[in-house]
Image (cartoon, rainbow, N blue to C red; front, side, top):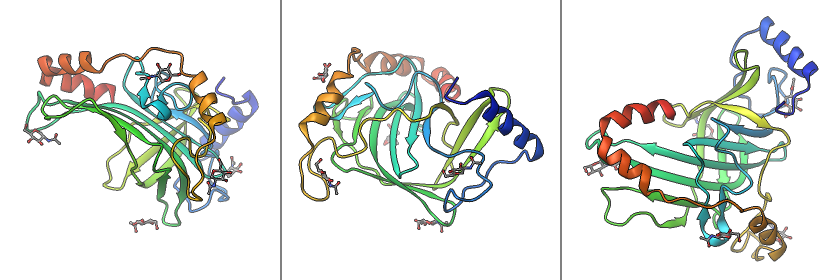
Length: 244
Ligand SMILES: *[C@@H]1O[C@H](CO)[C@@H](O)[C@H](O)[C@H]1NC(C)=O
Ligand SMILES: *[C@@H]1O[C@H](CO)[C@@H](O)[C@H](O)[C@H]1NC(C)=O
Ligand SMILES: *[C@@H]1O[C@H](CO)[C@@H](O)[C@H](O)[C@H]1NC(C)=O
Ligand SMILES: *[C@@H]1O[C@H](CO)[C@@H](O)[C@H](O)[C@H]1NC(C)=O
Ligand SMILES: *[C@@H]1O[C@H](CO)[C@@H](O)[C@H](O)[C@H]1NC(C)=O
């Protein structure tokens, strides 16, 4: 399960018993204290995962997961992919709950001070935001957010018998924890899929064909959760807090 052999799991659990601390981030993964590589697909829940049909950047479409959640994939060769579907509440106006779904991919770097930086391919990222209190909403637009995570760590979660990845944002806020879902990771091709790349070459049609073939599921509208959120107000804010 999850691509872990029983023996590697046993070894990891034994290591955990010997030293039960969060593995602190290191500037390079060659450090001896990483219990496993960051390579793989990590998700807060099984419904949200990178790769496959979550986003099709070529025609600006998303396939909405059954629940909110976040997912990141990493390769040991320096590529990442990010998928998020979340609600955020507005403290000053509880009925203004914003729903957003976003996707981007590109390269990442583990910095010497223990932080991690994501450098997206600028033309490929996509976001859709539904804000009941904004004048214009529900458009799918390009998204290109260089992201700094101040800290990251992987622990063995003995309750689930699986690795858990934790990311802390630059402002100290914690991202929802994620568990290892697949290794090797499920990712769209780790190169520019739309637009032109740094050397000015257009994405190859072959890659886009592969991408569109995988998008079979129907997208659903964001309207329902947002309408629900607006009418339930603070009650849902509490529930959403738990889901996230
Ligand atoms: C630590 O990370 C490196 C690089 O990803 C990996 O090759 C190595 O196997 C990891 N160490 C352990 C004990 O898993
Ligand atoms: C929160 O709601 C207030 C009042 O409607 C609005 O002015 C503000 O821009 C909202 N903040 C965010 C982050 O959406
Ligand atoms: C850690 O290193 C990154 C990359 O060099 C940098 O952007 C960030 O500001 C540094 N953080 C701190 C707290 O120095
Ligand atoms: C740009 O895209 C072309 C065609 O896909 C590829 O051969 C080339 O390596 C890419 N260059 C960079 C810098 O990504
Ligand atoms: C995007 O392309 C996929 C695959 O061809 C298709 O299933 C989907 O309906 C398209 N979405 C939009 C909004 O055109």
